[in-house]
Amino acid sequence: MVEGDCKAVSLTEQLFKHKIVAIVRGIAEDQADAATDALYRGGVRFIEVTMNTKGATGMIQRWRSKYDGKMFVGAGTVLDEKLAQEAVKAGAQFLITPNVDEAVIRYGIQAGVDLYPGAMTATEIVQAWTYGAHVVKVFPAGSLGSTYIKELQGPLSHIPMMATGGVNLDNMKEYAAAGSRAFGLGGNLVSSALIQSGDFAGLEQHARRYVEAAMLL
Image 1: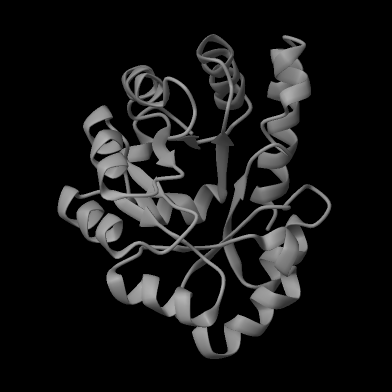
Image 2 (image 1 turned 180 degrees about the vertical axis):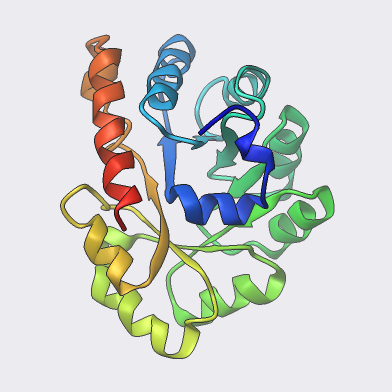
């Protein structure tokens, strides 16, 4: 991706192009900054920091400034409207939740950011879409399995879905074939072992393997 590409098309189209959202959760700020550098060098172009991570809003601010036009920065675990407001004020370009909260979705639409709420059942998925979600995060995908997403495609193929939880290099292709348009990747991509050992070159290489695999889907 050349500088400025992130502004060429809509955020949702960019998500479908790059397919991967890296999830940063519970990582110390200095390590999170170094990890984000490594993920960016490895080709990751969507990153979220969960709002229950210490210093999350500061990370969003720094990353938006540093990677403006190069990487999309969002907030995860946005459980209520107050957290949504804090995330958007910090510069979040998209909001991700583990649940369907109408107030969060409505606020995000008003604020002009993309919404990827988490849902499990068909009822929740349809509710999220009706409220205005751009993409629905099927969560926890690891417990539900790729077959679950495939079965949802019959009645709900018009709703774009992002599998999150339990997705890895070995099963990403299965989830894509089942109908997942993108993937939320936490510890399987943002490796705590590599981060804690300070192996950010290794994290870059690890990220590149995921990015290359996603581009083949």
